[in-house]
Image 1 (cartoon, helix red, strand yellow):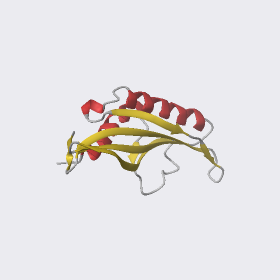
Image 2: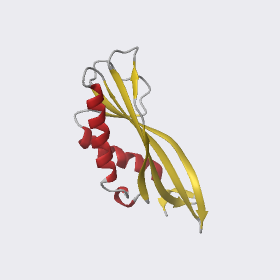
Image 3: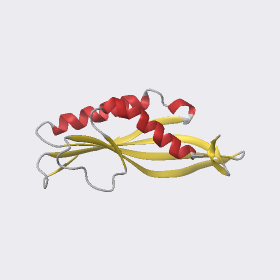
Image 4: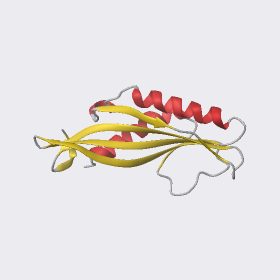
Length: 141
């Protein structure tokens, strides 16, 4: 059985894919997004911290970073649209179908790359609070 963490990540992808289509959602890509791709949304799990132990349950905080990437004259507009759509899809059900206690936005930043003409990357970070049984990462608590 999959861990609650993996099920959460899959639920996030399932929710944001239709919202940002036709842009692809790529989970932790090992290679840079190809220049031919006009835009994409990248998903990077950053940390999964234990925040509390109580009554055989562990409360956790999964931090993930969504990065909207686009190129060209309308890159800032495209990345903004991707982040807006992903944000709305992610927070439409802040319990992610009962897997999470809450989803909250942490921060957002902007970055343009002068070495690659017109490339914009807009990261937004979110925290997903959830519980597991202390000795079983596959069981929600």
